[in-house]
Amino acid sequence: MTLFTVDGMIRASVRQDRGLGFTVGVLHHAYDRWLDTQLQDGPDGERDGWLINERWLYSRRAPGNTCISALEVPRGGRRKLEQFGAEATNSSKGCGGVMRSAPFGLVPPWVWPLEWQFDAAAEAAGYTHGHPTGQMVSGALAVLIGALMRGNNLDRAIGEAMTQLRARHGHAEVYQAIEQAIETARRGPSPEHIESLRGGWVAEEALAMAIYASLVYPEPSQVVDALALSVTHSGDSDSTGAICGNILGALYGETALPPQLAFEVEGRDTILTLADDFVFEFASGDRLHGDYGPFTRWTDRYPGW
Image (cartoon, rainbow, N blue to C red; front, side, top):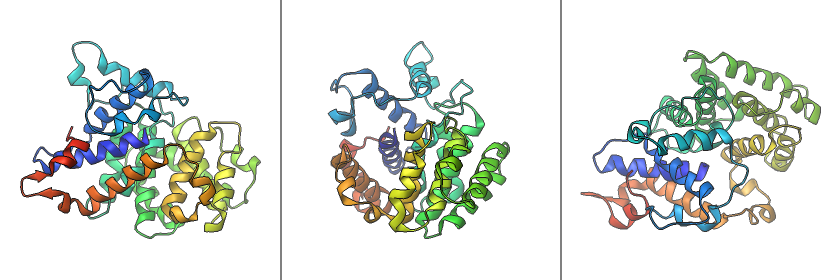
């Protein structure tokens, strides 16, 4: 879903350049395309863009039930168009929203200020997770990533996320979870300590566990140690590991990863291509967009809806 988040963000930016206005609702359509990869055996040729045609994506890798059920709702009934862009009607604060929120923090600050990063990530999380806490966590991670991308150290980035949280109603659960992660990190690294932050099944726990693992191994040479600790518990380890990877990636960059591991990542070529396109759109979009809007080859890849 993180890949389709990036795809949707690029499309939303293209839409804006076409004079239609930037809307996070384009992300809901992106997640609907992701749903195809979980319900179909392969591309059916009816969807536009290029990401949906990457066959390796058509595999169930233990997707969250909340994401599946929430995204299936707009596919049925007469209110389909009304339900796109609407908040999910469930009360889930599972970690499926925050797991896909890091890309919002990668947008340069001259394009999106921190407040916008927070709100956009929270709104996008709300398409599948209706509980305010789950949405707050997604916004907090986006701001944390954004602060790291601006060159702040991890402590300062966490502080910026907490500042953004304090400015919003209903932040208490998330704020307390982050405070607990910081306090636990002062006791050093151990599986028992990360286990004390609970299982990571809900959003604030998953973020807290990822922050803890990132804090207790603060050096670039300790990236693998941090990642290993982030998954060494009895809870939702793939989610906490993914969020920890988001933080460490923004903090240290790709070169901190052991190449023998990075080389083996499934779909590596797709991921790198999408990452390059994201940078092209948000850092150098003026070179892709002519006087009359984005170039045709670019809109073929990323139609603005």
